[in-house]
Image (cartoon, rainbow, N blue to C red):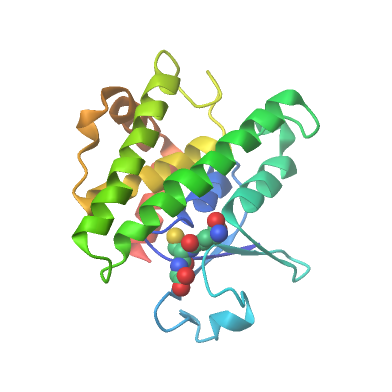
Length: 201
Ligand SMILES: N[C@@H](CCC(=O)N[C@@H](CS)C(=O)NCC(=O)O)C(=O)O
C-alpha cells in the first residue's frame, strides 16, 4: 500500500492509523501547490480531486476521503478494535464522530487557512469552531477517547485536525479536557512515529 500525504495536513490521520495497525506501507509525499509527487508524478493522475490523503492499494485501486480510508484500514485488522465491527451500533457511533470531525472541525478550520478571507469573516468561523470545541469538551469529560476507553480511528482524525490550532493562534489550553486528550494521543508511539516520519521525509 502507498499513502500519498502532505505534512501538516489531514493525511496524518490515515498515516497514524497505518502505524497503529502495524501495516506495511510506503509514504509518498505530495506537493499540494504544484500537485507533483516527490517521485516526480502528476498527483492529479492519482487523485483527480487534487488533495491528500489518497491510499493506493496493491491492486492499483485508489481510495480517497479520510473517513473512508481509515475505516478501510481498520477493517483490514478488525481485531485491532480501531473501528467497531461493521453493522454494529458502535460502528454507526464511530461514523457519527467521523462525520462530525470531517464536516464541523476539518472543514470548519480549513477555512482559517485561507489568507484571502477577511479577519471579520474568519472570526465568525472561529466562534463557530469554538462552539464545536465546547461540545467536544463536554463529550470527552471523563473519557479517554471519543468512543470511551478504546482508541479508535476517530481519535487519529480528531488529533490531526485539532493539531492545526497552532497555525491559527488558538490556544487549546482554554479547553482543559481537550488539551489533556491531545496530550494523551500525542504520547502514543504510533503517533510519535508518524510525526517523526513526516518531519524527516
Ligand atoms: N474531503 C477530503 C478533504 C481532503 C483535504 O481537504 N485535503 C487537504 C489537506 S487537509 C488538501 O490536500 N488540500 C489541497 C487542495 O485542495 O488543493 C477528505 O476528507 O479527505
